[in-house]
Image 1 (cartoon, chains in turn red, brown):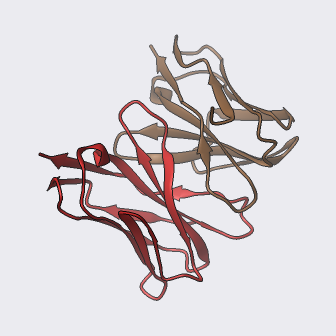
Image 2 (tube, chains in turn green, purple):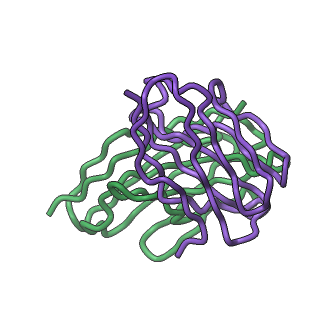
Image 3 (cartoon, chains in turn cyan, yellow):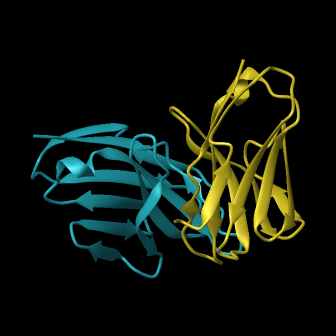
Length: 113
Length: 111
């Protein structure tokens, strides 16, 4: 089955700096890659996703890049703000598998003033 | 309202007792999932459903069973709770091929 590895497990940045979280996946047939943000005590929420026919996608301060050849994808957050502090999860799934997502182990991002 | 609710939100139960968690959706989505979340492990799939009475196992299904008799309800049962099943359980729903919407979670403690 699919295996998703995520790094780093913790990340501390100063407000205004950029943050990058990286994930690798094992199943070359995976074609859907979402990112979730989970604030303390809350449910994970989808913040951005990308499909394998696209190399990059942006939404305001967040962007995701996908390298199919290397089987890795990354989340980029620019101009970080304290409210960006949370745990971020990457995930992957392949078509025809009931959209089952395999998640990475999460990155705790702390944005300091 | 996210269109998905879980009950109960918190539960403490004794080792060896059966426990049922409920997930209810109002979105009429085909796919429903149960995950558990543990520190250092992220979210791991327990069971999922692709339609009424159509369910299958995920990567950590031992000790769990599920049922889906209606589109809107997906039940997770711990047949005989153990301390290793202490966790936060999340239900999720998805339209075909899309991202998930998660419920608020159930914090289960087995003592």
